[in-house]
Amino acid sequence: MDYTIADRLAELRRTHGYSQESLAAELGLTRQAVSRWERGESLPDTENLIALANLYGVTLDELVRPEAADQGATPAEEGVANVEALVAGEDVPEGPPAADEASPEAQTEPGVEKTASVASDSEPAPAKPEPSVAPESRASSAPPMPEAMPAEASSFGLSSYQGGPAQPTEPPAKPHDGCLTKVLLGLLIAAVALALLVVGGCVLFTSQPASGPVEEHAAEVATEERAAGAATQEHAESSTNEVFVDVGQVESLDIDWAAGPVNVVVMDDVDEDGLGVIVTEEYLDEESARVPMRVDVEHGELSVSYAEAGTFGLHIDKGKALTVRLPQSLATSLRSVECDLASGSLEMGGLVCQTLGLELASGTMDVTDVVADKLDVDVASGKAKVAGTFAQLVEMDVASGELRVTSDVVPGDTDIDVASGNAVLELPAGSSFKAAVDKDSGTFQMDFEATRQGDVYTVGKGGNVVRVDIASGSVRIRER
Image (tube, rainbow, N blue to C red):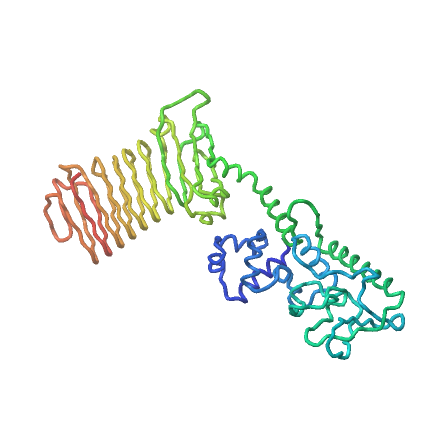
């Protein structure tokens, strides 16, 4: 797409006081679609070009060509408009009549300007001279016509008709007037042909409705975009995209997802075509199909990302559903599992790993039956539930939202940090530990029977330490 068209679209939007968001809302589109127009990456289709022209009060030509708004149409451009109107089935001013049907015209000498007139029965008035050029072709530029217009008004001299008192007829035309008319007609046809070549258009008279140069260019751009995005369109048509990774390459799993449900499933080992991890994404809207996921394996880490770098977060209306199927032999021997969810939901269970890291920006997490030496959960906003066996370390960080961690054993070391929100730690009955609480504002609740000295709560024989830091919000330690 020509940059000047993109610049013109942006200029008109700003001139009429629209932001990209408000213009997109007006047209029923996404902001990204408007942005792609103004970056020159795509062109509005015919329907949107017409909508933009109506919204800004300009013609299609003025919409895509800045210079068209500052100068009148040339005869060649008017000829193009006539041809486009004919193709569309619209009425246009009639061309010059045959020599034997021409309205009275006079030309005293070669090179002297021709005067066109319309006969009338009313009082004659001085004739208005006009240059010997092609008449205006756009019906919208002609003056309003009276209901009872003289028959001669449809002749080549129509542009001189101004309404009101009719102009007097001229003396009979000389014999060479018919030749002059034919010359002018030939010049008009040549001008139309030249204009079509200049704008690169080609009007085809077929049984199908034709379109003008602007619409044809829009169709060409749309065809190019479809061809360029053929690969992603295949994903959209099938609604899914699946990747198989050989199990021998994988030691860790890292998921980074923008929006949509994520499900990590443990399946029985099947070694028919080679044991492997199956990663499948399902597109939930048309836009998400344009940004297929990225699956990489490096240094034993299987990385699954919502999209390629630089497109993260651009197409997340409904998002995409992700399913990761792990053979049981791999799911129970992972080095680490990391899952970062921007929005949506996570369901995961049956994993055994050394380290489990979970980050939730907004949405929900439900993790069950997990065994990990170290657990690190960070909740910015949303709700997360994590249950399993965590022997060495549990770190719970809540900015705003809700987090509940249930452990079958008392971790060797536990840190709970709440800025605002709620955190719950569930431990088995009969546990022994100490809880050291540092609270600025908020509440702390201990459901175990404990002895208290200042801000230290001792349960059973003490032993392992649970550190609690509350800025604002609540923390509760209770029996499972």
